[in-house]
Length: 380
Image (cartoon, rainbow, N blue to C red; front, side, top):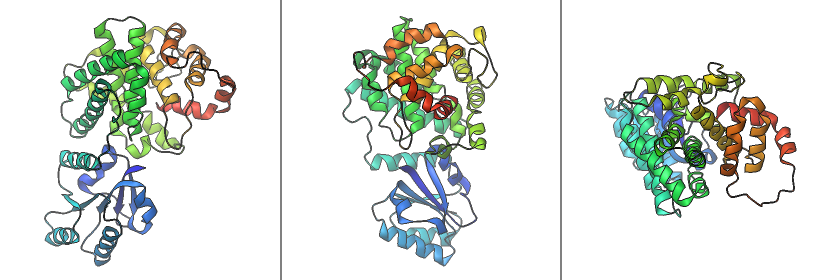
């Protein structure tokens, strides 16, 4: 299910602040002629950016509102155009935003829609883990807003979130954390929260000091911050990415470097993690092709957590791998990853699977899905 179905005039695209919607939530933009009730049912909310000076568009709006009375709706207008505003108000049952409104207003409106839907992905979790998960999800929303508005990042909230994740993983275990955060509807949010949880558990498994564990965990939360500049429709795309989309995603480490370097007081280790988490020890990674000692131990650890999370996270329309299969894939990467660290990661990877019997051969399954595995590793 997508967050928003955005309906625009034929041969048009979202205007004004409406154009920022795909960066705030997963949004599918379609021309009015492509609208169908089936598409509408598969969206959490409907967004309309139409010329309401056209009578047929107003009739269309009334028809959709009548047929889907309970579906949340946002209608964009030009506030200076009295006719458009009157038409939008006359239809009723929608939140009306101006195309010249701020991105902050749009973000707050979208968040309120989801709150009104009563979607709480943390329901059923322990108090500490649920609180940490909500805190992390809210942080990522605030970070997105800050980046889009070119405002300072919420550094204190980020640091507090990392501490809460470490405490939750220590108190309730990594499985409790993973089970909760994988319910979040956004793959992007889910992935970063999974990586941060694995990072916290990995740091503790190596008996690192508290500050280093916190830095590694915060690095997990922020490592993909550069993806804020990439539309969620691409990040959460269920099908195969084309070459242009893949090239766009591969820019996220550089975007992350730009975003964090422009901030004051960001620990250099977090910037390094964000910029280098797709580098490989054999020089085959990106964006700079670093190798061996050019890649720090913390980056090497985060890279293992990142790839393992990408392989094991459960996503609609995409196959995920068991922990044993995922770990075998990491082993098969050979000199790309730090073998000593990978061995130390094993107890974290298999925390809930010791003694579990598998009938299938994990290596044969991993090999048969080589193309998908490569894509997951490259875009995680």
